Length: 638
Image (cartoon, rainbow, N blue to C red; front, side, top):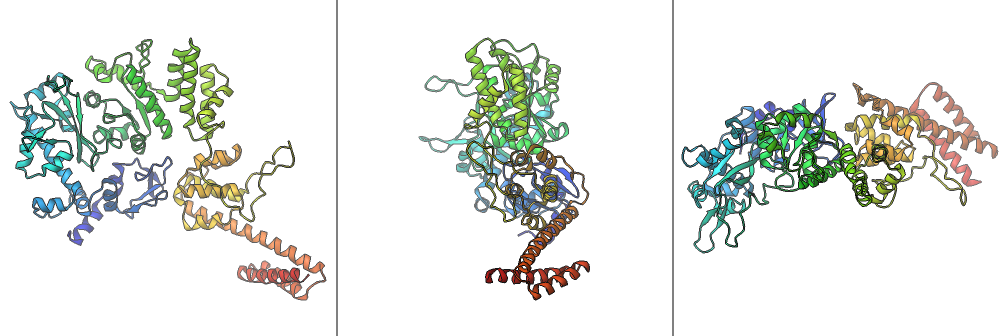
């Protein structure tokens, strides 16, 4: 066990904003910080961090805790591992206990895997630095123009051609080779017994996460390896298999090295391969990352969205690169993140459809001395939708079938845009750019989204409130539907405040105010926001356009004390409810008097008038309750 005083010392020294900031792009929000939650896929920030209290809380998924909890939850570490990691970072020494291999295994398979990956990384690095054994690896890096600094930053290593070098090394370190086999570093020899190395004569690229841990490897062949028994060529890359620590759909190569550059530049440049990342970092592009041998996933896009403001696609210029660009474009639109596509004017050949010209990849362009051209392409990147409209549609103009396919592609892309206002703007822009009537584009989008002119609304309808305005009704065959009026202004102001300060959602004050809302649309919006949806998505769907604009106007965004304003709005709603209740009771009183008069009701009403003048709220409420009871009894008696 770790002593309490050491835990307290780590907690006092650890900067929770800095720790969480490695994984989430945080922005100041009053005394706290706000960002996209790393524990669930949200599109609008509901994740709050209090530097003063050393605490985080997500109003969407309800995850909360201190700096230890965050590291444990996000990185899957034990408390001891989290304490060791934080202690090393913030200068607090955590006493280590000598552990046998058996005890190390008892601490968990994950810890064992991380240790073996650390040992393997050290081995590959040692071999690369060896004057004789690492000569082939160093020659390859020199050929690719990769210097010592980038080699160190990416912890690059070399796996020798020997069949048992790594297996023997791990065995000497008393590592569990069965676990190493599950990590894909070695494999069993079915006949001879024992294990052999899977990586041979390859440059090894460790996959490093933002904590600094190595979770997997991607190894590139650099020599001329022997063909397999069936005559097939060996794969160019061998990547780690899925394991407890390596989930390729969630990871990005180069993310740990690019994180600072991404936050500094406000962007992430996405390329296809590992060496595109390494070469571009060598050329001074510090914000470049790549998927790990698979198509871009939504989880990877959401990871980037948490860390930066926009994504620039810089894929190869061949047909495969074009397809990858279109797939990535759809993933980014689906995640509601700003996406641009880098394109060098004049280099795209007809039929290539790529972003950098037919057959041109960023790595080759940099190697040929085109770093400045690449920088210009990135700086002048087009918006993703604009790229599609002008690049794709332009190549389809002469062919009706190609135009139809392009329009279908565009519709599938636009249908993923959840914000109705943004979607309508994109539809209008596409119609103009494509020279097609907007109604045609809108119809295609409707078909792509499931039949309607827009995707179905998300979220459930809130239960009817007894004081809510009447629901929309149809007055007769062929007659138009009655349009509900605007929500009461006091209630609209409450929702506007919550839209600008989502951290207040689900606070006791906001929950209390919810029960005072009389407008069914606003109640439904609050319920959906409470469940994690964004007012940016909800307002255009639930409210008329002028009212939605009011909610999203940012009226309260600069408020220095939003909680005080929430209390003031809550008070206003309570007063309104009291006033409405007064009116109802007075109506009951009048009705009772018309029925013959009641001395007791007359007396209570007189006392009520006095209580109002003296602003004795407690007496007012007591008298109203008595009047309500008497009026109700009189009605029943009649």
